[in-house]
Image (cartoon, rainbow, N blue to C red):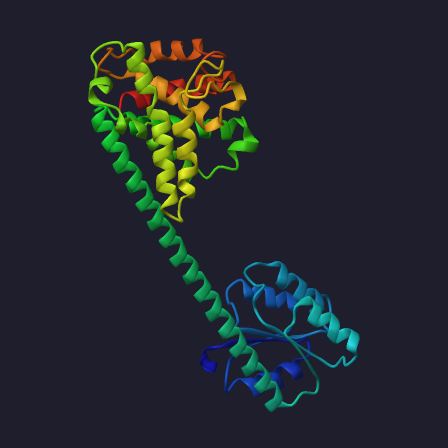
Length: 356
């Protein structure tokens, strides 16, 4: 650190001490001679020093109280403070150091000794700031690297999801819309404090992109069944239902091959449970009510709603208004009643997404 660039504020109610102190320091530092704590705080509004030399015994506001106020102010708390005082008892020194002073110099002081102590403490402060800057830069590097990993993960998810969507002949953006429906529902749960304990533990940066894999198992279902222009036979429907365990196995296989698989935890749950029904009549496991993970119950609403308003090989689309009625009619049978109530709060937003 270039000493001449450092600002030292010397605070003492004794003008003789201010004059002597400034004379000692002016060759090496930019010195502010300040006669009171009140004046100090006025100056600190405009100038931030590299160090404070602070007298203890001052009228109106002593050095201890001054230091307490400095430490209570986030902007000023890191300024190094050396106490200059005629008090030599151990208790006074301990109090000053306990409040956060970095050193305690008794009067009368030796000019060379004071200068060396200031030099050493400024060096320490400089090194501490350099370390802080390094840590901040390191944290920023970690943040950027984490963002890059998340971007790569999302790109992989999106690519796989696009392949599934292409095979299923769903050219209307089912994957992207169901993500938006899911995010809308989750945000509503957070705002309304619904299932708050569970939802608050989720990392939405993982949950929402994971929804893209909810039908990944369809990649193993034959085109004849996926794109059949009509109702499936019971045998064909049984074959179609296999996309759920196939999807779960696919996600698990990906997870086994990478250490960075936290983002797949929600994907496995959503893929495996979004066809379960609240009354237990869904598949593949016939789970009922809260046996069904919350992610799956949410995805069930998003998936069914979008299927209703979209073109399928076996059906024409219906209007958002009709889809809303079907979702609300499924309250307590197909869908979690609490989540249907949440859907009711944002169904107008669902209708807007349906137009995309």
